Amino acid sequence: MFLRSHLRDGGRVPASVQPYFFLSYAHTPRFGAGGPDPDMWVERLFRDLCSHVMALTDLPAGAEAGFMDREIRSGEGWSERLGAALATCRVFVPLFSPRYFASEMCGKEWYAFAQRAIHQGAVSNQPAEAIVPALWVPVPPSQLPGPAERLQFNHNTFGERYVTDGLYGLIKLRGYAEQYERAVYELAKRIVRVAETVRLEPVRPLDYRGVPSAFGPTGSSPARTLHVTVAAASRHDLPDGRSPEYYGDSALEWNPYHPVAQRPIAYVAEDLVKNLNYQTSIGSFDDEAGHYDSKQPPTRPEILIVDRWVVEDEHRRQRLAAFDQESRPWVNVVVPWNRYDHQSRAKEIELARRLEETLPVKMGQGRAACRAAANGVANMETLGQILPQVVEAAAQQFLRHAQVYLPAGNTHTERPRLLGPMGMSGPPAPPRVPFPPDTFGGHNDGNDSNDTDRGDADDSES
Image 1: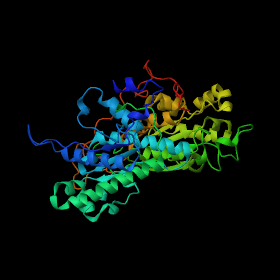
Image 2 (image 1 turned 180 degrees about the horizontal axis):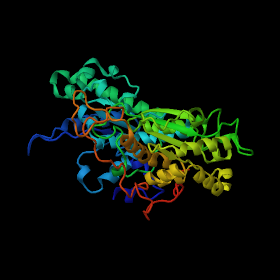
Image 3 (image 1 turned 30 degrees about the horizontal axis):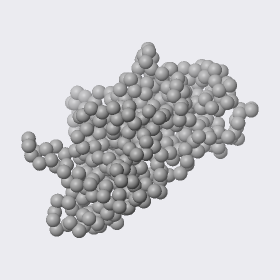
């Protein structure tokens, strides 16, 4: 309803309906039928922030200073409205609390907004951090998920009492009215300053119901790790005639989406994986080839990003073929492919065939997880959409093959638990599907007629 009326022009939302900031918070359940709404204090904060933002900016009368999800989560069109607001707001304001980081819906909101910032940073090669957190209830640093822990933000500038009691404490206690007003005013100033500095561009809305949580699955370990490996050449050892404009001094500087993107794909992928609450490392296949030992249990899931042009180098092709023969199902393949790279497009059929012959096992496994990832990821936007599927599939394979440890002091347990970096705090949960089957290709067995055979099916944003 909301999108149908406002997104007819190329999937964009008119400026008149773009909120200045998005207030993200965890709904608090009522304590009984007919009791007071505990979220009324959040609504008061929202109104105060909107008032300050209107006073501090030149937003016209009637403009949406802020967006707050009140009652629409169970109403008609709630997913569309949330998706549109997250795709167009200039600043994201999460209200930190223990309940917030336990909420999958709040994690979805965070992920959808952060993906915009990662995409813009890839295009401009400049930081695009537009998340301004606020303490609703103080949260110990040890309880913060990775995306929140990595934010560079100093809460002390909002006042000492704000740091110890949060906005909830200040708003509830009469004696702290002055401290509350100061904290809210400082927060509004920070929102405006970030909005004017970063100037995050609107994007096409995601289906909010289909995005994963930036906080990871409920009960997952805070120390989850994942490794990203890039198989590509450097500008110094390219095949004859291959343009060096897509390459740098090492494989980690390969930028397949040049000139639209200014940032190498290894670092963009690293940011996208971190936004799924992983600790991430990156490396070059050239440096790591020969160090794999298929007899050893895995220590982490992995993503292998492959440039099809590597098959033109016989030594690299042979190393990839040897790697493919090892049983490492926790390594999933992603194949970026820029259809506007004229050299690549001219040799597409040949390079695709040779890569299939070199990595038959990995390519088949990749299609089982996400067909677009193996068949060719057309642009940065599509990469952000399919990577959660690829990561989830690699993580599930890791859990199936990782070394199992018995809980301390118990030698008679029937179901051993994983205690490694991907281990859960309880019995293993059934595999989690990050997207509905009809969203971004979904998980499939290769026979889904609704799936997209090619990753470049929609590259209108390239």
